[in-house]
Image (cartoon, rainbow, N blue to C red; front, side):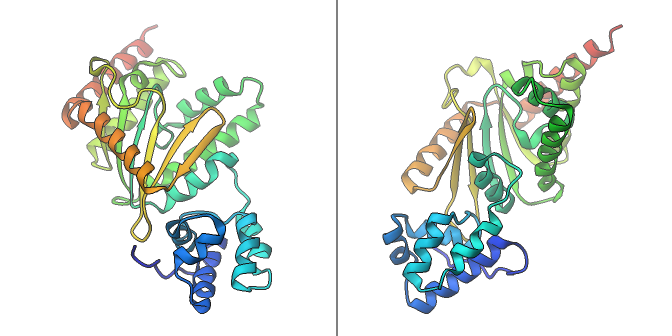
Length: 280
């Protein structure tokens, strides 16, 4: 595996911890795999800590201090990177997402978070948490919109999204919200900011229709896969498991419509919603 890139320690607490971990490990004369053994993690996992693609949890920090003789440095400082506005099961995935150079994702039934408009996200959160206050909903929407800012970069990350036709047809927030959402996705595709395909109903049981798949790739660390359910998620780094998720995504992608046919379908459905919303 390629060595971790040089990080600016002032950029974030995790960047500091990663840079310091690499320094302490090399000073001790350990390769990544040797440090990983007593932690029961792979050398790749240690590399992800050093490159900043994974967060250092307290139990690992304590053990690392013992192994490397760093006098409690990591235990004291890992808490600085622990605060997050996201649910615990999703925090590491979001942090990795922000560092990825390439993301491939398939999301059944709904429009994926990175492509959601504020109106769509608001309707979704209201459905998930019907007793949440308006302030709480507003904060959740703002957090989701903030995630999507990574799309303002004209080139990074490369985002390859496969949408399920069910996500286009499922009315979240009504016709006007859906029209806006699908026009937004079509606009991203036409500006070549994303690669977008649609898995049509006619594809049948293609690849994975039960849960979504997100694959994230980095210049200096192995890829990660993320799968999610209700109030739960799993970040996967074991190479064989990641490879299996990659195969599943490839099967879904192979069964999806071409780029042009997908764009035509999205724009057609968006137009239908727009006409409906315009009716008195």
